[in-house]
Length: 184
Image 1 (cartoon, rainbow, N blue to C red):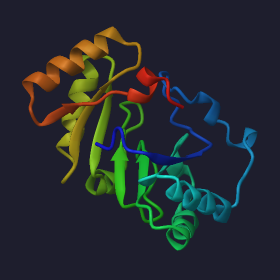
Image 2 (image 1 turned 45 degrees about the horizontal axis):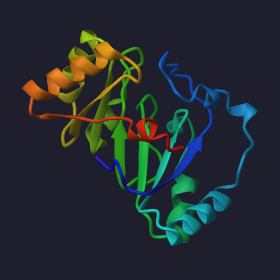
Image 3 (image 1 turned 120 degrees about the horizontal axis):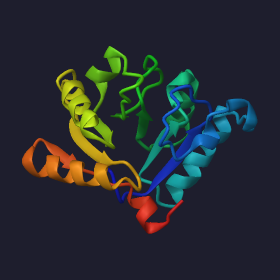
């Protein structure tokens, strides 16, 4: 829903979800990344706000493998940017995000509290089973905007997601535009 807006990303290391299509597998091993103090990350967010960031995105790896209370508190004390969380939902919510993007995985479904709290449900589509999972998961949410995202470099997923969004108006199509634009 926020595609195209300037964001400051905090990518936390560590992930046990292990999606075969993950484009940040280098983030899976937390111990191979340097630790930063939450105040340093908050100061970086404040600097990003001064240079045009519209919001902070806490992502991963899987960010909820960590307790986000201290990080979100530090960001709120340092700047006025809204805090967005992008998660697969395999762990309980922590911190105080303003917006939650839930990107659930069939092989490791999300926790109930995330389903009810998420603002956006984004399901990656590679095959027909992903569409069934998307519908089953959407029924468990209460207020989420519904998005289908074709798996990167997956022609079948692209075809399925487009056709499904065309015939099911409650779903929107979303793309990893940063990849198409080669923005990192």
